[in-house]
Length: 334
Image (cartoon, rainbow, N blue to C red; front, top):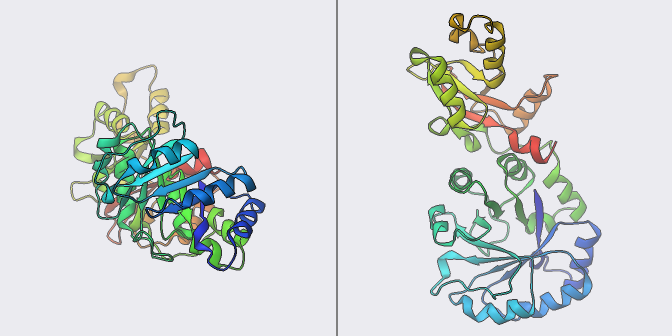
């Protein structure tokens, strides 16, 4: 996940000093907020003369058309327009080659992206826009899941309340970029904050149920409806490589993974009529309590010598509540 540094969050130093510090610490992107102020482009021109880091421009305006010429004359790598403030249609220069994004605040449903489905990414504003140092609203975890399900080929960027722990969760969810402002500049140093935003050992304020994939979005088979065809269909439809097996009251039984299916097929390869679907269930799979913190989850994973790619989430009564997967960390972090 890329870190986009919000350059105006440092109020104590000249802009040039801030930019040089960010360049020295090899930040990924420079996030430039434009609250309907065209003078921002004077700063963009200066930044271009100081460094070649990609610019991540977020524009809040009712009238995007006033920025067409400015974007043509000052091309940037990422441009996002704030959805809620729009009065007219978003316009880009005909020769615009950067990535196009739509920003939405927490109450706005991600379905509004349908009007702009030719754009490249959505920017989820997880705190109040313009509010430095706000707390990440956990409702946005479900928004991110919903968007990735609706638009699997599009990217998700996040702005607001991203600390070390939130950064880990977002990376695990497959978020492409997160904006960091006050957290980046208010710590002992930019390097210290960047380390916290990218490390895997984190202090915990959130628990697993805050960011898990809930049961109604998980691949589930009820034990009394178990069949080989149903297992294959559920795994295929869930696209996660496994299915949870539950009793009717959602009591956790175990799970069936692609590996479990392969083992059963190999064991019965000479006579598939004897294929025992019940034997496919891994009844000793590792699960985690919904009240476990992020740090406790990481400590659990580290206890095992083999890689863990998913964790069923259970409550104190052994009822399944959802799952946590680590597919995105395996792809992009490990």
